[in-house]
Length: 80
Image (spheres, rainbow, N blue to C red):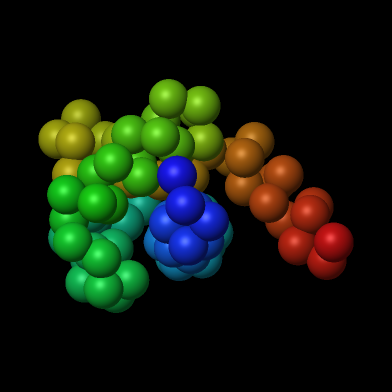
């Protein structure tokens, strides 16, 4: 994968994390709207987060919340 694509992907992931770092539940539609990322891309990012237990979806599969352990990790590395 070209470096420019890696940078672009990391920026997309970072924008989603910035939204989720409040620890609240967010709908995929709102994340898509606020981050200006197509919903299908949001779904791929959230699937990645779920795969590594970084986030969990509600029973409808339309709302996501960051995992508490991952949230603590993110908060601990913010200043690094």
